[in-house]
Image (cartoon, rainbow, N blue to C red; front, side):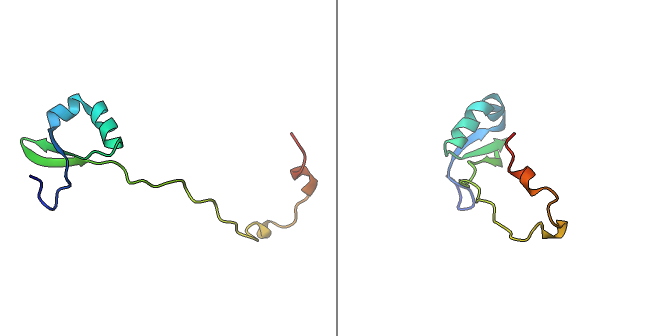
Length: 81
């Protein structure tokens, strides 16, 4: 039974984890947690990544390029390529 310090999850030997790593990764990606054992003792955890969501949009920074001076050919920015 997991202690309060251990997340709930399936206990798997390191040997078995090496043999089935691809399957374990897919299951972890699906939300499962695994406690990997080495010589019968807890050694590592395999957990899903926290859902981060899409990155925030870049923030506008008015005047950020002002130190570069005036554009020499501003119409060049509007030409289609």
